[in-house]
Length: 398
Image (cartoon, rainbow, N blue to C red; front, side):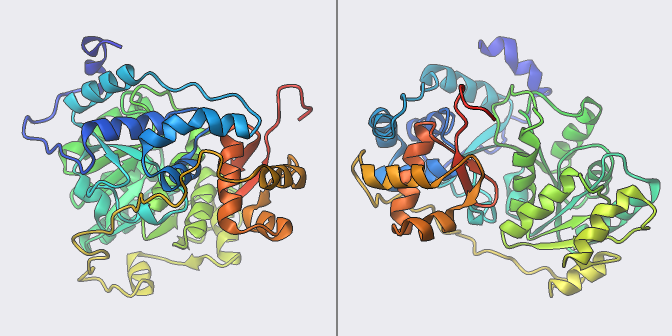
């Protein structure tokens, strides 16, 4: 992974005075990235490990014992020197690695249940702290839908809101283009060096050049896979105080964004459409199920009690820092009986963690710690909506 072979994949190099700075020192941030990239450690388990052991360094040391106590093999750690080379190459291209404790970590993202431990952000990081509205919808959008997305995005921008979307074709593209002058944030499913769709590569650079930001939780050279788009969608809603769905079929990824917004306790708005248009079925169902029907930006702003002229700051200048104080210190925290009871109570059908707590009778902290151990041991799988299931082993029947 030589720097000279990959730096050109990021496109034009930014200005030399691009702001680079972080709250974590380089070695600590490297440990955070190494732990975050370790197989079987998702954002929730990552946070549990930091809280239990106090630092990424100590959590990395504890992983072999955790996996063995959970009945599995230790996960293979990513090569630290390769990660250091990756960071150097990406930072040369103006991509910042921002960890959860860093002052520039998006404040709204801190509030979601599964914030990425490390974000890769290119452009103006202040945009990710702005009061933002997500505008998403169909890739195969109608002309009317694209016009609606453009008009609402422009009007929200004029009222002081940033626009967040996914750089996809259709509604996303219309929303980004309309909000270029006032501020827009694109969230990628893959890495910064793998812009998707390729036709929006110029829009990617337009966003940066116009003071916007590009956000990803993936390695720079990661190709976007189908399973990465739902993960991306939780970041779109996680950066935003509310999500607007403009057009969406019943099986649209935009409905996943709406669901994650609700799970994050954020508002969901939808534009109604003709019952004869398949692209309106998702929005119409959202409205039937309780999403707020809106016609224009004024409806959204009035509902959020902001008014058209002034959007007050949502956060203080110094956001609360991530508390990494250790609450547990033993690699064997979470007794064998807790893990065994949880395993015997689970099946391959996902169930809510609250139900696991209630049915097993253990405390929430004990259950969360045991689930983290079992995830590292590849015995359980996490799902959206705070659900877990038994992991399907290679010799199991799906």
